[in-house]
Image 1: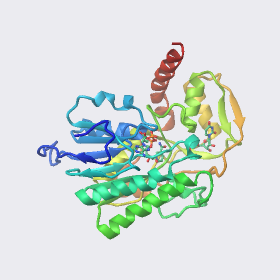
Image 2 (image 1 turned 180 degrees about the vertical axis):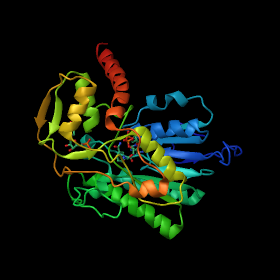
Image 3 (image 1 turned 60 degrees about the horizontal axis):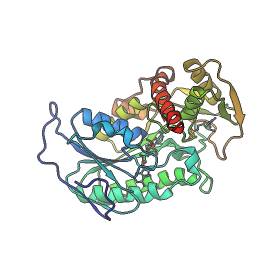
Image 4 (image 1 turned 45 degrees about the horizontal axis):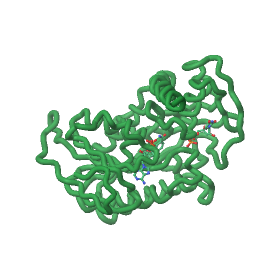
Length: 342
Ligand code: NAD
Ligand code: UDP
């Protein structure tokens, strides 16, 4: 196994033997690209806890070693610093490959790496094809753009500005879905596609510009909550453990998808600000700022397909989930502040 190396090609070694885990389930070897990020690291926790072998591939662009450090020393865990865009990975013996590497934040959207979504996905699809692994793509609700259908079903084709400031992300994921389906139809690779709606929880990037992380960090730092535009635009916020359960159900199920994975509870940004105030600091104030270009006016998943075919639905409402991320944010903000003092 190779970790922290800058060689052009990485060889993913074989795990000795396949040990049965639980009743009727064999231990899987799973590659998680972007596994040191927010969603990826929670998924890794779940996979390790249930007895799988996990190889994380991450270039730490937005991910952090701290998110996976608790697995260091575990022989079933391996971490490879690698840019999925740059080169190919040569592998043997993986069962499932989960492509979570991506740039997600609105701040980074302006210089978002279209290449990660396209070349990264292509490289991982190549790996899945060569070694006969199943590939799961974490796509996004952004493929629906500024939707003209509400709530959004998987059959909706979307309303995306192909040359707008968000297009590197939206169109990058749409291309990734196309590539994934091409490899499925053309090369017979086993595929799964998740369309993830706004997700929050501990380990989210602190300053990535997303609304939940911004509001929570601002309330903790005693700064005004920045509401963009008139604050009447809506989003549907899903707690990370629900998403992880959905990803595992999808990975193990029979159906390619795409599947919407999100919580249908819909909130305006002003309502979200109120929930953050209730949860963290009722005296927090709101400051209005101009909105970003091409911001979707509303978003809410129709999850009938996932309910029926994956037997999955989210369990954690916003008012229960939000308090679960506060301590993590408080600790990290405290550490940052202490670091600045030295
Ligand atoms: P994140 O930024 O926390 O995680 C992404 C990870 O990918 C990071 O660890 C980053 O370092 C890594 N990465 C980025 N570019 C890479 C590259 N070229 N090579 C190797 N690693 C690279 O983001 P997240 O919120 O955990 O998102 C994970 C996935 O879920 C992404 O594919 C994202 O598009 C999708 N998604 C997330 C949300 C959400 O609300 N969090 C919504 C829709 C879709
Ligand atoms: N937003 C906001 N204040 C912030 C950050 C974002 O009001 O500090 C708004 C943003 O304009 C958008 C919504 O919150 O309407 C969700 O933004 P985010 O970047 O979290 O997710 P996405 O737009 O990708 O769904």
